[in-house]
Amino acid sequence: MSPVKRHNETKAAASGDDSRGPRAATAVAMAIGFATSSIMMSAMLQVGPTYLEPIYGNVLAHQWFSSGVVVCMAVGAALGTRHWRGLATAPAAGGSEADARTERAIGAALDVAALLTALAPWRTALLFQESRRLGPMWGPVVTHVSLAAPVAAASGFIAAVSVARLVRSGKAAWAAAYVGAAVAAIWAGRGAGGAYGGCQGLLLVAGYAALSSVMVKLLSRHGRVLLLVAPAAAAAMFCVLTLGSDPRCASGVTARNNAGPAYHMLSRAESVTGWVTVSDEAERQLRVLRSGHSIIGGHWNQTQESIFGIFYYADAVRLVSSRHSNERALIIGLGIGVAARSLHEQGVKVDVVELDPAVYRAAVDFFSLPQDLHGVYLQDGRRFIDDAADASYDFIIHDVFTGGSVPAALFSLSAVAQLNRILAPRGVLAMNYVGTLSDTRTLHHIAHTLRSAFAHVRCFAESVEDPVGVTNMMFFASQEPISFAPGALRRAADPDTIRSRVLAGMEANEVSVAYDEQSVRLITDAWNPLPKWLAPAAQAHWHAMRGMFPDEYWLNY
Image (cartoon, rainbow, N blue to C red):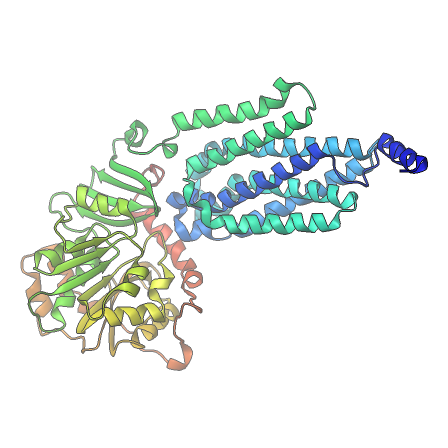
């Protein structure tokens, strides 16, 4: 190397020239920031909506969440860009000083994310108290911002500062690769969020951010060690306090769950569909099974009869066609097991498919579901019907509504075709749908899709009195005409019970599914508008649930 070149390099280093890129410590700090922000965002995309589901249901908790996260990241990126511009124009902002300030900025952003995420359960608890006032539209939005903004904004800030540092050193290709890798890592990590629970997932994110902050600061050595770790220590302290005091961070029934006299919680578990609880209400003498922000079943303690009469509609499948011995039924979506128990008691061999093991366990332990059913399959319903043998069942009861929505894949053309395939030639399908009678668009599209596989389709509502209120509607589909012998439903009722009254009045609640075929199309896996169309019904369902039970009940999970 010539003396002139060596002199120029020595002079550049002394003056803080950053044309050669960030120093090793800064590069490592940027890598830590990249990895941490990607993992935090992936976790938050999974944990955030899950954390809100018990208060707002699965549709409203997910609605706008991803969009809100993107907005918060953009705000963080704008702040990071502004911070870097101020740094770049400051005196003595050469390479060494730029590196030092970059490291400090990344550490500070991680501190903020750690502290505010550790405090998130406390903030959201206050907002949950105001959920009725905020309502099902603004409540989730406000809570989303409070919950996810620290992580999203910190991730955007770290990305902006890191990219700006790379661009300043002439590493534009590296900066582009950084952005692309961050987006890909966040998107790929969304499916890995199943390992995170609600409250515990939040605290895990906070702990990871705190640990990463300490690593960045110890690496750069800017300041005293005690001051460097103080924010992370504070975040850890808040995490420990939350774990010890917040029932949402504990499994099983806690003393705080039974602090009030109105409700007595018998069982509580955070499972694959969210929080699943069983509670007794003293005043009305009933027991209910809750999943998220939805009552998926319940019975009157004195008579053991279902509090929802619609579940007895399923008994009508045995009155459509002639009966024979060795009948088999498939129940997709268990609830408390009203249909499964009823058909079992009538001598039908019943197979149950239920996604959530906690729901099945609750039905057995607290709602007298027989343990000698023909088969119990704790798996996804769509996968089960795809794998089942042809003509396996005489009856299929399809009831998968929970939390304000349905699994759209179980209402598509291919799913309906599979249901028809596994039914016996004279078999009957009963499919429950929850919505409003005024939403004829959704009703007609579901009916049209059913008619693509079945020759005959009829629909009966739990009530036809309120066209705009949310209600259960049971579709019956078969290759045989769906008709009941005169008085068959009334005779099947026997004594004066809820079941007898519901069955006797079922035909009076028939819903017309006549439509113009030019105005509908088949619901397919590729074109399935149900999640979008059911958003208004989800708000109606939220109000219905809040009308059925007070805030005291919904806030206790």
